Image (tube, rainbow, N blue to C red; front, side, top):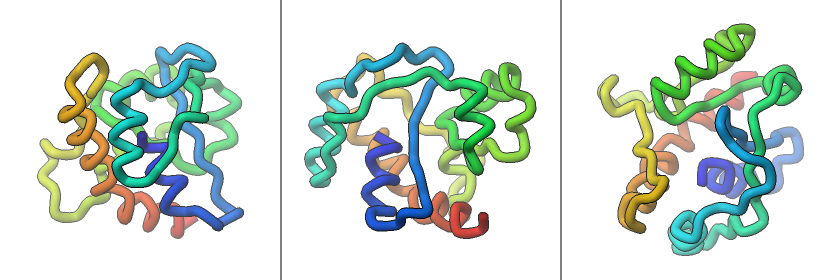
Length: 136
């Protein structure tokens, strides 16, 4: 959902590339039915997205890396310590958020309402993510 939201926000900007990947992700899996549904509610089609594992190549090529939870951040930095200077929580730069609200809810296996909440938590971060991208 984060990939779809950010791609939607930067549509037409050819100097920005967005890819999502996961530390425990398989290769080529489609988004969940609930993820597709809640993104369609915003007019964003993510049906052509596919999962991919995070690799050293992706880390090396990325200017910024955004994760959803502190657990993801810890795992990321344990596996790829060289990425520490460019890895952040996706909600980290929202200025009016408490530290405890920096994480995004994990919707996997949950109801469609949890997917909506997750989508909205990510969407709320997009302005601050774009500000970080502009600084590069």
